[in-house]
Amino acid sequence: IGGAPKLFRYNSRLPLVVYLPEDGTVRYRIWSAAQKSEAIPAAPATAQKKEPTVSSQKTPTEEAAGTPACEKVQGAVQAWIDGMEGKAYKAELRSDDGVSPLPSKAIHKSLFALQEGNLSIGIGFSKPPNIDASLAELQATFTHIALDRVPVPGIKAVNWETQLQTLVSSFKDGVTLESWKKGVLRVRIQTEFFAAGGHRTDLIVPADAPMQKGAYFQIRTPIKADLLIEGRLLSADEKPDPT
Image (cartoon, rainbow, N blue to C red; front, side):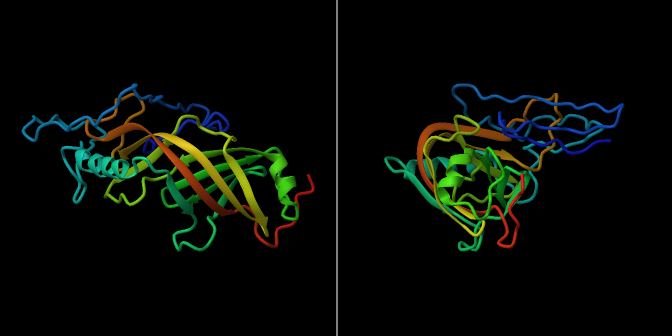
């Protein structure tokens, strides 16, 4: 049994559970960034190609049609950072239509993931939220929020995914629940990202192999953020959880 490797951001509050056949194995690798990270340039076009392995993969120098080079995507992200100098990144995060609340997926009864496109935000409570609860009651059970994937705004590149990164996987400070109506939660988050980065989404990297050159970059710089998030945790007709 095999599948394409997937990159997960570490979250100390959300362990990864993997179910396997009795004789199955999991191969994994923990990635960490150096104190100072820069784009790794792609190998020269004249570099000699290696013979393909059993799991033959394209390298970043063998670009898929329309895929920009690492330096180009990094330059676009750097330009956005430069434009934010002295300002906080302010955004209202809703569904793609800009009006509807973000849809959610229940990880379990008290942990939710607000997800759409490349955006993914986790929110947790000490007990399942009740659709009839007051805002104060819900606030009392709120435990954490996790900005798992927040794309750099305005950056769209084929086979690339960008992300603003927080220092900790989940936090509570700076988070205010502003409203709770009919299962829709409105949250304001005032925090700081420590870096912006990007990685190729079309490359399969074996768990025991290094990231390929030109497939990843990270720009470390503090970016203050003031985010307003609106997401639907419960459907309007959902019954309160008796537990």
